Length: 312
Image (cartoon, rainbow, N blue to C red):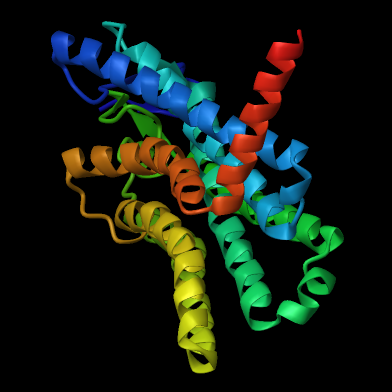
């Protein structure tokens, strides 16, 4: 094994999802379509919330930010993965690899905190409806969104600083479709057990703490409303189900990759695809299919477009 530091490493080899050429062509078509749907679906939600005055409320302001984050969460890894399906030699530069490590953790951690902010928004709306707009004003919402990005930045920076200190050894092969912290650590020339524990603890602070607080928040919301009326409980359950689904889709894969790793290569790849592609794809569908106001906004946008087309 040949030891290298970061100044000597120029690129890494990505082994990807499959070695079958025929399968890679099929995967190229599938993931290209999925990525375009992710970008289109989330952009539509952002446009609707921006231009439709009926959606100018704190909940939809946070939902627009979630759509923005989802686009970037997928964009960190998916475009590179899609183009690599058509390449025989899949490589990524050292700078590109470190960028993926940083932005993947920054955006994912930021989204977790943002989901916690959205849970707080639902708590205020359901448990303190008379004070909702006073508490969740634009200044506070903006501050909470900035806080989520700050937490993500600090978390990602701590991960990046740790991995930059590692002496790396040949062969610089990463058995996945993108660079991720646990996979880069495996390339270390030195004993990385302590760093593995540090990474699990660092990720655990963000992932587990947010996940537990989210479960407590939604449980408290449902119990509070249930005590007031059965009809209210049904409405609250309908409102919170979409949020809880999104939480599970993002958090469970991250827990089994970073906090409680199973170290099963094919499963790690599946979970990585799930939270970087499937979750950003399902979020717009989950919120729009269960939200009458979003559906009505889509109808108004379609009607406005048709009227404009007729007039011209």
